[in-house]
Amino acid sequence: MEPDRLLLDRYVLDLTGKVTPKVLFVPTASGDSQGYIINFYAALTQLPCRPRHLILFNPPTADLRSLVMEQDIVYVGGGNTKNMLALWREWELDRIFREAWEQGKILCGVSAGSICWFDEGVTDSIPGPLTPLKCLGFLKGSNCPHYDGEAERRPSYHRLMAEGRIGPGYAADDGAALHYIGERREKCISSRAQAKVYRVEKGEGGIIETVMETHYLG
Image (cartoon, rainbow, N blue to C red; front, top):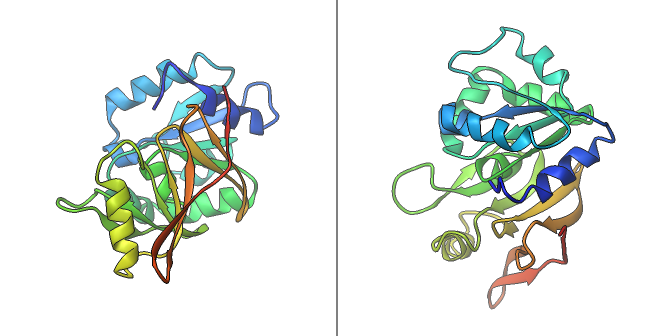
């Protein structure tokens, strides 16, 4: 997302403890956009890693499990989360990714690649107002990306929660991220000095938004 500011990317690579970790880019949500894939390589080839990608419209192998298990990091791109999850289930990638996660592989991503790991998220996958979407459920609660980057994200998250259509969870400004170890939230980090993560929940007087301590990586 930030090709000229690779602080979050470096952070994820460092988590592996390896000199040149293997990174698998999964651009399903963008319809396997060729431009997105090119941008991924342009960014990641600046860093010490071994990048490759997995497309589902012309997959490189029938043995997707072995391909995923060979990686240190799975990096999921943004786009249409609803379509992405439907394709993942058809190809059994939802099961494969859970197995990879349980074996200690690092799963990460931006936008659709963030909300997909939670119970549910706020999505623009369907035309019209933003809606809640049931996701993979590796992590408890809900997730809302682009909190400061898109005008409708914050009010929509508040509205859906007030109406009881989505549960409590975390929102992240562009450039901010949540780091989990297993199901435990380890810390909040950011590549921009002002970017924050927020705990958002429903209280007696309305929606309660708590700014989380967010560590700037710069």
